[in-house]
Image 1 (cartoon, rainbow, N blue to C red):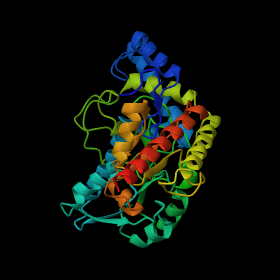
Image 2 (spheres, rainbow, N blue to C red):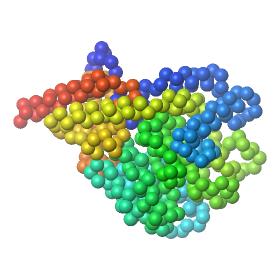
Image 3 (cartoon, rainbow, N blue to C red):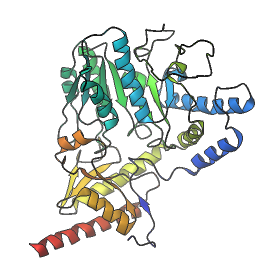
Image 4 (cartoon, helix red, strand yellow):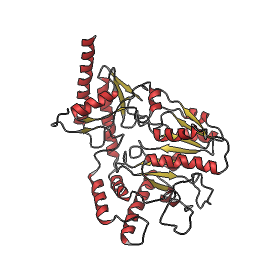
Length: 412
């Protein structure tokens, strides 16, 4: 049992950031007290106030990623929701446009299950021709390998900006340029769950067609918030009913076009049906206001300290790139001979330290890294983590490793 006198140490920010900035909870409470109408579903002041909060999120996300217009930011219930909206939408649009052959989609083995499982449900029914490009032992996917997997008929390329399991940052801009030479009509979907809020993203400069956004990780907002950006290539301006390359099967009220049974054809309403998580977006607005460049620099300094500390533990195995260049503030490791889930349990139950051990919803990533049997232990500091807390984690881990080594020696 954990010592109740030891403060709780949270090192699982790759799963969700915590603690949130105090302004996040305050903004959500203020919304509940004074603005909690249904956004866009009424002309009264409470509905308008809620609508203003939602539009503020759209505007702030658009500004953060340099979207050409806030209307191209569709608000979602998280990054998984955004990825599903994009993947299902592209496949359904292609089917509706009369594509009889299996639709070719290219992705990589370092993707999160939000991508892999969504693609698999079509590939298993032979609805798509799915090609998964391998990565190297660092979790890095070669841009040219992605291009080589494409054909001129490729409809969609799905890429993570950084691996959630090992933190390796992918060369998105180079990959998009390479793919566009082979498959100029293909749409490129980028999963930014692990990067936005840490790494600058400019969708126009990078040539991203679809960007899935998580509100609760690097942006520091509440769970249940996210967004999907769509370029003009993915969803043309003033498009007719069947011209969009992303079709939405989610039907319902939008608050903008009441008469008729057809969904609106203009963004964002074309892909937003039902009441949004307005209280969550109130918190996300406050979180985005609190973002600083210094916070990410602080997290990367702590990441370096973690890497250096792990290298001093004889039976520690570190995965991914060698240093902090080319990685997010995420470190994946194992203690040789100890199940990663057991390491996580010992840290949690005996030492009040929260990390994550296991497969991290990315089974093919672990296969590429060579630890597909049990995965690894992931540690991810946050903007409020201190150097002394990281040292406490490293000292505790070193003790666990020594105890295990001693136990093995005694039993030999």
